[in-house]
Image (cartoon, rainbow, N blue to C red; front, top):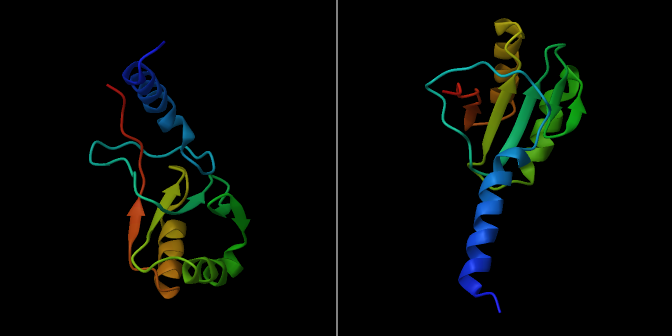
Length: 120
C-alpha cells in the first residue's frame, strides 16, 4: 500500500508544475521587465489585446460600456479586491491610460499592472 506521504508529495509536484499554466485570461503578448512580480492573489483581470479589444476576465466588453460593466462586477466583490491590467505590448500608451482613467472613474482603488518576467 502506498503511503499517504508519497501520494501527497506526488500531488504537490503535479500541482506545482500545472499551476502556472492555469492562469486565466486572454492571450496577450505582455511586455517584459525584471521589476514585475507574479500575481497570485484573487482578483479581476482586464486584458487588452493588440487590436484594442477589451476583456474583463474572459468576457469581451465594448469600450463605451466598460465603466458600467466593471462597476457591476465590482459590486459583487469584497472591498479592496485588486484589478489586474494585462495589456499587449503593442497597445498605444494613451489607450491604456484611457482605460486606467475609466477604471478610476468606476471606483477601482487597487490596480495591478501585469508584465512578463524574462526567462534566464
